[in-house]
Image 1 (cartoon, rainbow, N blue to C red):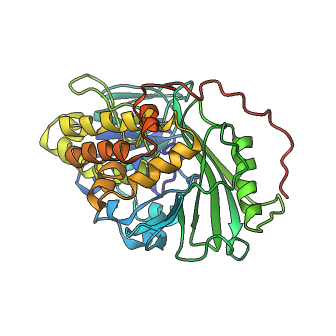
Image 2 (cartoon, helix red, strand yellow; image 1 turned 135 degrees about the vertical axis):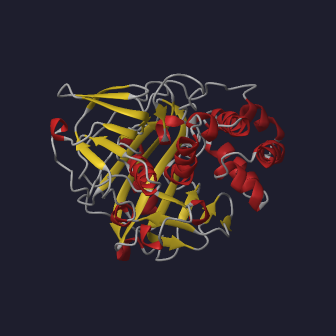
Image 3 (cartoon, rainbow, N blue to C red; image 1 turned 45 degrees about the vertical axis):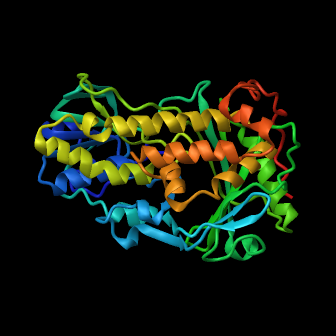
Length: 410
């Protein structure tokens, strides 16, 4: 989710051969929210910054959301488009999560990360090395450190997050979601899927611009869930609440791997950062807030002459990632009924336990406790065997989804 770009530097559009200086302290390749934040904070710290992206003026396409308390203190409130004080989770019952949640403003976030003192080069990188970046026109840029923030490699057969979002006018969306409210996870059986089909849930929040996104989401399936299947399920949910669409509503698609591991330290390599560098949460698919929170760690490592990878990924953070991967494997083999029971058990955990799974980068002790207790509290007892992988390890592998047909938007 970090491969789109925007820039507001006076050097934007200057051909690579015209760059006044191809030697820098740091070169950031990719100017999505993660790369732009890293370049901005490095610039603010006094480092000489190069930033490379094929289309640095392009506005970011995806919708970015997070918990408010995940955002770094240096980010101004103008980066937030809308806030939900207590988002709703539907399992078999309705729960309000007493933790403010927000949707980020793409123009507000961009404007909060100016690159006025950085050199922004509109070009495609063809080779990214530890201290060099080759551009498509044959130019080679050099820097003391190179950070690769170009987003995720292709999905392939890895476990995936798949989502199809439809943007609906707020007045039309009001039967389900109104201003200041949001559905973080809606597992109610309203999406038209049968009990023997791979599970998915609804995510829906107001975007602060007069629209609401309704996004059917699948987590953990190998290769992901097809967009036409997710769209069909979204329309089923909306129809269950009397919401009917014209078919002209804008939409967005998400389809990316969740199993992108952290980089190994001490290797002569560019520093993968953001979703490309293991900061994609394996159980939720979120990456932007964690990446924003860690940019100063990376910059401070450079200022101190340390290995950024070692600073970003101490042992406790790698342990947290490993445990979350166990959770991802569990998610990918559950039925809808089992998923509902598992999330119901999880959201009875303490606030710290919930944060340890959903947010904290290195809080391993409460994460271990909440994972154990979630399995222990999931009922009936024999469903726990699926969660831990003692049976149905590849339940949905190669599931034969119905082929795509012309969309039915009524």
